[in-house]
Length: 212
Image 1 (cartoon, rainbow, N blue to C red):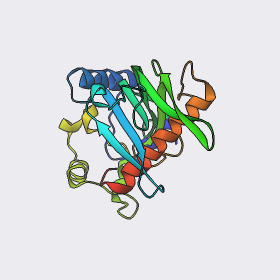
Image 2 (cartoon, one colour; image 1 turned 120 degrees about the vertical axis):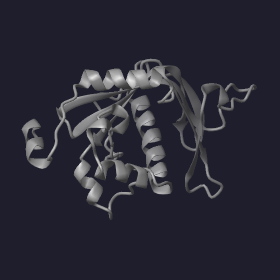
Image 3 (cartoon, helix red, strand yellow; image 1 turned 135 degrees about the horizontal axis):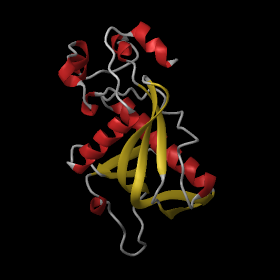
């Protein structure tokens, strides 16, 4: 999609720069609207066929075995700053989670002997292509849209031009951005481990909740 195509797709268009969006996101983190801590624990279900995820409010809430210094499963414990990277058009962008500090624990080794490995996640980034096409709200069969989101989008007014009102449709959770997803100090194997962890988490969240 070219930038000019948007004028043929929508009746109302507002221009927001990438810097303005990122400044707003930084403010939302500063004021606690967006949590600064991203803490997710992944454990194996009793049937050994699926993962179970638990999200914690704070890094200090993640259970750590005092004997080993490790959590009970793969996990991430990040201080984050969300950002966007607009590469081509306003309806297709890349959502970036920049890790300011924190740790990650992923399974490593050669099967069947696997062990948790700890990584310093400072300055890591996880990037995900996002479709922000409001027209897709009408596609009921392919999307689950909470009533509150649906009402805001179908009764749109100029007082909704804020970052907190932007609607992001994570339709491409398998397609993490290989250019902007980076794990300094960890190498390509760690990039793939982070991407798989987030992919499985997002797939689980999308399939189990009314969460677009």
